[in-house]
Image 1: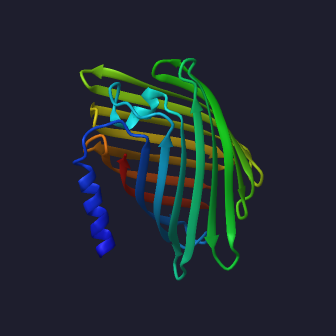
Image 2 (image 1 turned 120 degrees about the vertical axis):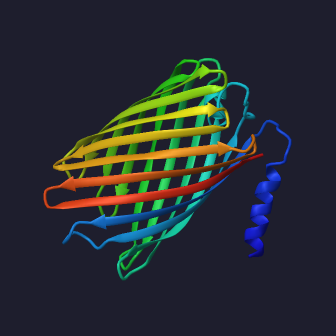
Image 3 (image 1 turned 60 degrees about the vertical axis):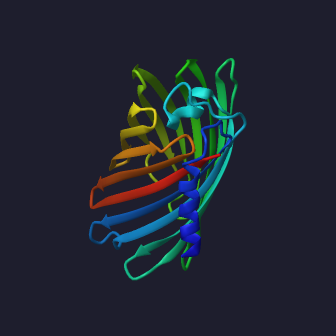
Length: 278
């Protein structure tokens, strides 16, 4: 109890700090997942995950241009980040430990707008036959306007259970002011999925966020994937509110529906988090 109250006190004490440029961002997130499978496929399951992470920006964030949530995008801030999560996966009658860690770095050339990033993610599921999933990849891209980027990316997945796969993605992201201190952003991505144990497929993604003020953002997102005879629809909503430049709270909901001949999967994910910048 003392640890919990100390954390809450520290968060709200941060909200009284004077506004200043920050280089360090920390975050804490809680996620809950409920998944239902069609009969004779797999037992229904639930899971939870607690994630803590930190990002260090090589130059201080500047809040003078756009929404607080997009400060690094507007400022072209290079960064390095790491996160660790732990949780539990619970199919009916069982419970297995689930943990993951992520390393990521990106570099943006301020003058030309060229950028590159790299990412590594490892997830471990502690069952009777311990399984591991490793993902690694990167992207290159460019700001072709002050607040518009295009990028090409590659992500490799090595999965003990589902087999290996590769994803090749072309994406675009754009942000714009639409009134006094009102903004929106929008992005799309098209991916080719190279599967080892399934037919190849493709993935289409769309997302947009409206910012009625620099401190508040509410967004919608959706995706469609087709792999072999399987169709997957993902959609959801996000929100984030900055109390000031130092402290923010966020929440999101994501729904996944996957269908193919003989089976279906429906999953709901609820996520809540906080972000502190120093």
